[in-house]
Image 1 (cartoon, rainbow, N blue to C red):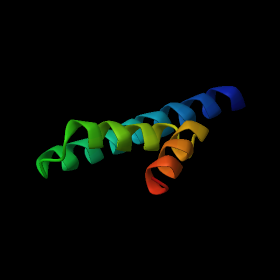
Image 2 (image 1 turned 180 degrees about the vertical axis):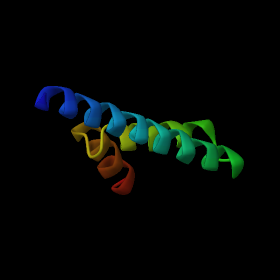
Image 3 (image 1 turned 180 degrees about the horizontal axis):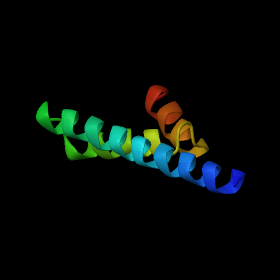
Length: 63
């Protein structure tokens, strides 16, 4: 029973998370943001503080 509840809660969280990402993307599109910016923000949200992203930001800030 607990597994079913946990699965349902996880499913709800995934749906909410996907909805939030979609809403953010829609807001960015509405403001005319560039596709590359949307891609970077989507990557940032999806991989929050992934090492590759930190390295990219570090290089951009120190050039």
